[in-house]
Length: 108
Image 1 (cartoon, helix red, strand yellow):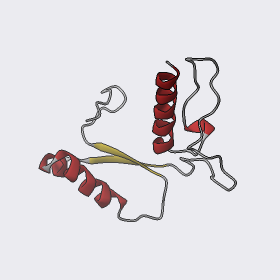
Image 2 (cartoon, helix red, strand yellow; image 1 turned 60 degrees about the horizontal axis):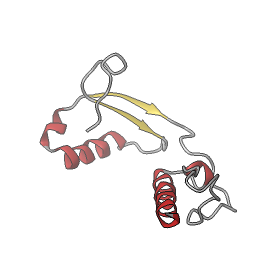
Image 3 (cartoon, helix red, strand yellow; image 1 turned 90 degrees about the horizontal axis):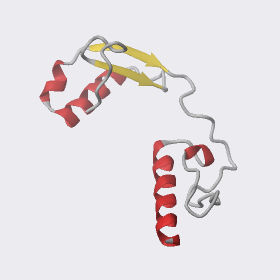
Image 4 (tube, helix red, strand yellow; image 1 turned 180 degrees about the vertical axis):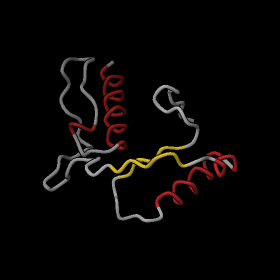
């Protein structure tokens, strides 16, 4: 579970950031997901604020790079990782890290 700094987020509850402003029932969707993750306690959480994030991810217009091809290493055990070299999104950041680790292990 995420621990938030009381000086930044003084109220207990949940904050919601979303990119798609067209989803009218977004708060209920988040409530349902939190209840699935954290149990019935989440049903008592207070919605504190929703942040509308219009450009959370950059545009992904073709042609895009192949996220399954790792960039060349800087040196034998030094690689730059992250989705900034690939498609934006957490799954591509994680894949980038995994491919770098596997390459370092394979190189010995």
